[in-house]
Length: 460
Image (cartoon, rainbow, N blue to C red; front, side, top):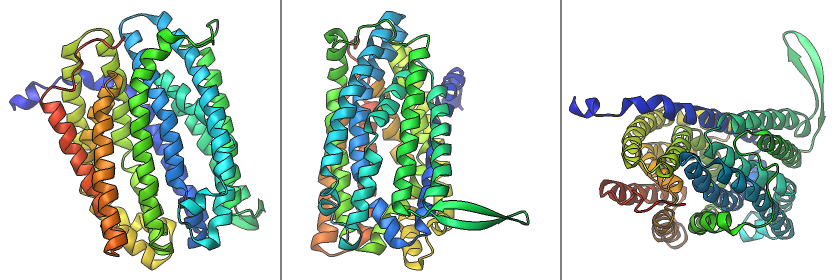
C-alpha cells in the first residue's frame, strides 16, 4: 500500500497526453505494415521473402537518421523546459539543414548500392532481382523520409505529438489505397451483392514499393508544412546556415546515439543475413514474426516518447525531483502495459501468423518464436523507458555501450555459433535475441537503481 501511496499519480495525465498520439501513430503504421505483409503474402512465400530480406537495411538507414533527430530532441526539449523559445526556433532551422544533408546523402548511397544489397544479405538467387528493384523504389524519396523522421521529432520535442500522428495517418491511408490498386491485377469484387470492377496494375512486389514511395513523399510534404506553420518551432525567419551553438551540443548527443544505432542496426543486418541463410521458410517466418511483434511494442515506444520529452523538459527546468517522479511513474505504467501486450501476443500468436501466411510450416515456426519473445516483453520495456529518459537528458554514451555490447557479444556471436557452426534453426536465433533483450534490461536496471541515469550537469 505504501508503494502505491507514494506514486506520483499526478503525472499520469501529462504522460498519457504525450504518449497516446505516438501510440496511435505507431498503431496505424503497424496496421498498414500488417496489411502490406498480408497483401504481399497472398502472392506467395517468395514475395514475402523478397520484401523482408532487406528490412534490416531499412532499419539501419532509418535508425541512423533517427539518431540525428535525438540530438534535436534533447536540445529543443531542454530549451522549452528552460523557457528559451528562441533556441527552439534556431534548432528547428538547423534541423532543416540536417534533413537536406542526410536526405541527399542517403539517397545517393542507397540507390547506388541497391543492386548489391540483396547479394550481401544472402537473399535467394531467385528473388534477388525483385528485392533489388523494391529497395531502389522505396529509397528514391529518401529526402522526404528524412523530413518525416527529423521534423516529426522536432515537433514531439515541444510536446506536439498529435501533428506527426495526423501526418502518419494520411501516409498510411495513402499507402493502403495505392497498394490495393498497384499490387493486384484488375478484378471483380462483390460488395454487399454488387459486383464492382476494381482496376489493378498487377505489379506485385514492385507495386507495393511504388505505393510506399508515394506515401513517403506525401508524409514528408505534410510534416514540412506543419513545421513551418508551428508557433513554437517554425524555422521561418531563421538562418539556415550552419550554427555551431546549436550543432555542437546536438552532435554531442547525436553522435553516440548514431554510433549506437548504426552498430545495432548493422547487427540486425548480420542477424538477418544469418536467418536468410536458413532458407525461405525461416526467412518468411522471421519476417512475419517481426511484423507481428512490432504491434506489441507500441505501448513501450509510445511511453518512450513521453519519457524523453518530459525528462528533457525537467532537466531544462533544473527540476531533479520531477525527473525522479517521472521515472518512477512511467516505469510502473510501462511494465503493466508490456505484461498485458506480452500476454496478448502469447495467446494470439497463431492467429496473427495465419493472417500473413497460409503455409503451415511458416505459421508453426513463427508461432513458436513469438511465444518465446512474448515472455520477455516486460523486461524489454524497462530498457526502453530508461534509454528514452537518457536521450531526453542528453546522456547517450551509456546506452551506446549497453546496446552495442548486447547486440554483438550476445545476439550476433550467439546466433553465429547456433546457426552457422551448430546448424541449429530459427528458434535458436530468436533465443539469442531474447537473451540480448534480457541483458539490456539488467544493464539499464542497474544504471537506474544506482541513480547514474540522473544528469550531473545541465545539457545546454
